[in-house]
Image (cartoon, rainbow, N blue to C red; front, side, top):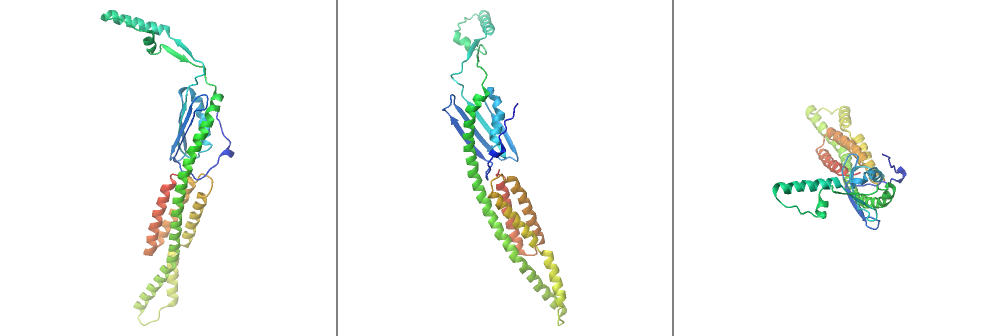
Length: 305
């Protein structure tokens, strides 16, 4: 079957939710056309459609039209096309089958001693006695009628995705701001942790040495080794970079779900490293708070295209 590709240049992306619904009904065409589109989350683009039995040739065109404007999600499309009253139809009678029905009814009447009274209308209602044949659909003419309705349904569908996407974007942005504040707290606490360690070490050395002078050089060396061991400045710099990239993506005009998911994994890696290095109870508490916010962001971006 031919593929109906739409140029990539026509694709316009914004931050959207993968959940959406749109419907349009065209009653001005020669025949009534209804299009309903809905979607839920999915890792990739998955499309399925339901069309009238004789119009299966439209499926590829419908898929191409949707894929040109939707990057990801499980999409279901339902197309209804009312029969064209102006299209001539030929009704034929299956005479051999009708004769078979009459013969069978006669045998029943003779066998069981009952009368048979059947009208032409009753006979016509029996399965397959009448058949309706219409000329095959003109694919191009039908698509010319269906395509505008599909576009209008897609407009409504994408508008809902954009509204939902904006709510998700705002929520994720607010959580990124919270995490930035938390990173600032970690950066402020780190020098205090080193200073507190130095004070504790100096106190312990004085207890051990008594009246002897504390070896200042040894104290500086031990403090420097401790500071190096718990230093998280590299991790906080990378974490801030990941947060900046996520914010940049949220303000962009392309699908962001997969990229945000990757950056979120990297942000989790950095905060876990900070937590493992931390020797400070206040920093440990902040790390727990950051992990909770990252998890909430992860839940939200699962809904983004």
